[in-house]
Length: 230
Image (cartoon, rainbow, N blue to C red; front, side):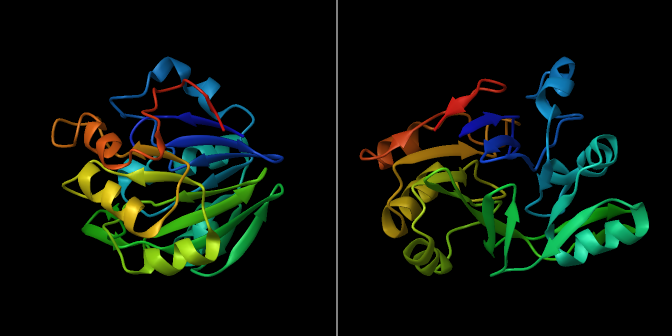
């Protein structure tokens, strides 16, 4: 499995026969080198969206149309885009599992908000979500934007993820200290990768507190466009 950070909460995940772009915010992302866009999306087979906010969804339609690949995510938003934008889509909901090129992706709860920008203000975009992605002998928990939730207890017990991709920048989501607490309290991760940080001064700039709080796990601070083999 190969995982490449695209900055903020965006990842390119190469797993089984799928190349999944997770929340690929590229245009206007201050962390992403614009000249490497083609490299980042090359060969992608699916776009997996956690929620509607622009720092996660802004490039979704453009990439989906350019590559003619489906958007995978909450039914409400995906179905609306299918009808309005003519894209391919795989809409489902929490508890559901879809097979993406041999990777089994289950939608799980998150606690945040979800909307798209409209001409008269925010537009409903379904509900926020996280994902458990199973393949190549691993289960990867993609938290999406969230705070600590009691739901993490059953999610960990049922899905048994060994890799956690956790939002940890604070202000809009849990911070590094809270993410470490949640990982200790509920999960048994072998590897933890933080995201939703460093993008703006408002967010946390280092994962030091996450590392300090998880001495038994390997905490990998990703670098943009530098692949991580798992």
